Length: 91
Image (cartoon, rainbow, N blue to C red; front, side, top):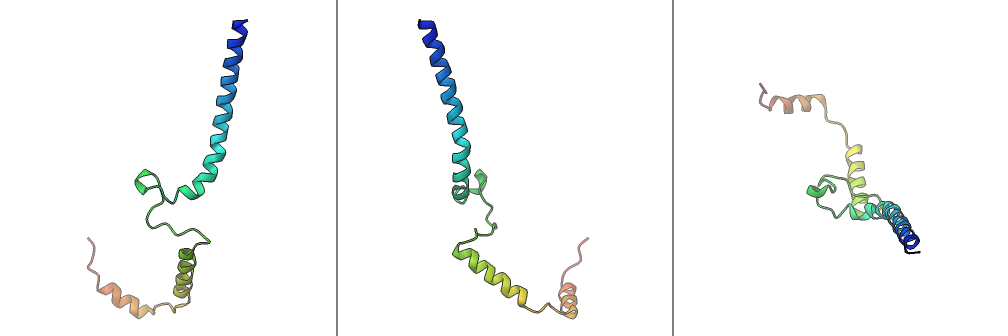
C-alpha cells in the first residue's frame, strides 16, 4: 500500500506543478499591461521616449501637439537652404 500512496503523491505533485505553471501565463499577460510602465529601463522597461498609453491625459496632450504641428505650414525651400548653409561640413 505505501508504494501506491507514494505514486499518488508524485502524480498529485506533478499535476499541481503543471497547473501552477499554466496559471503563470495568464497572470503575466494581465500584469504586463500595467506593471511594464513601472519597470526601470535598465531592467527591460519602457524607454524614456516611449509615447504615453492611449486613454491617459498625457496621450491626449501629445495628440493635440501632433495635430497642431501637422496643421502648421511647411517651411519654404529658401528657409531650408539658409539653415543648411549654417551647418559645418562633415568629413
